[in-house]
Length: 416
Image 1 (tube, helix red, strand yellow):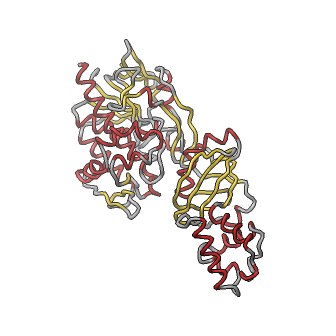
Image 2 (image 1 turned 90 degrees about the horizontal axis):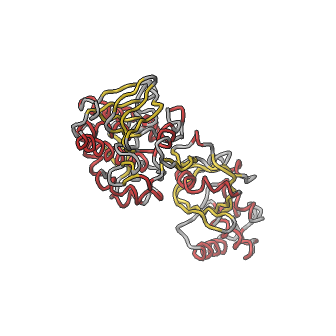
Image 3 (image 1 turned 60 degrees about the vertical axis):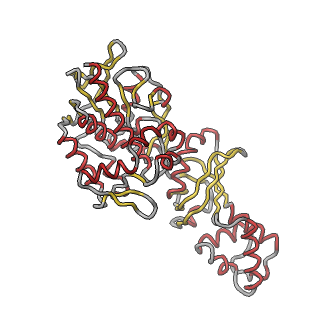
């Protein structure tokens, strides 16, 4: 059984790796510690199955953070066209939403899982459920077996696809970190990614539930810009959520160790400050008898209008003709940079992805193989990968799983 590929983890990366290795002629066993496959996959896209994002490999790379460059070979080998063709061949065509997110035509994440499992079974993949892998055994610098309970299962190659440490209820509890570290791999400590942000602003509750389209966010700490992003935003009773805040969280979650973070929200990113100032002045001149709250509603929801007026020290019921130039400048500043003090994120167990994981500099980007142990391969969120929301992380899982499975199958053919 030394030519067997053992895949550890039954998520999207593991299933893709197992199916691809079998497709390439390897004998494959997939080990999953929970009673069923795809626990986290079932939750993607709110249950609708956001399986990827349209665009070229280079466009996908731009949304995968610092790991984008490392992932480019995998994305080039298994990009959007290849992903769509794969599911089409399995009888599950994908459709792109207006924002570029890819969904199965069924709009059901369960159908994605059903499709993947059927593909694996057709290729002869064996499944072992409720099985915890306790250790990876290596001999002479090459992986040789995996310990499951009291048994050692021989393996010609191992694909570690155990996921990260977010949503531990799905089985992602950081097992892969421990297994890789035992063989000498470095692990970047996990931190929350794609997670809501917590604010200390006393006004945040007053705008809870307000959602905004396409605003700009700039995060800074002690005068130094940390990150910036743009997208839809949702105010919550505790802070901020929505795609823009979630994406930002992956860039700043570790920075809270250095203290609070100052966020500036550009409520009207389509207007330069001088353009907004001119529009505001023109509107105030033409609508002198109207109340400020009425005028501001052409740009903002009512609750935010009240907030901007209050922060500018202006009565929202005041006639705009009574508002001076200094107060107009204050309102422009607030509209272009509403300040929010951030004090943290929701915990890792509530995060959509894990920032951190197996250090990428110890992995061959062309094979997903370990540079430390022969026959050991990695795929998916167990790696130090954390991209934007919108299907990018799942596409990284497919691409790395496809490459890892293919490489593992090639490896066992060479060593036999």
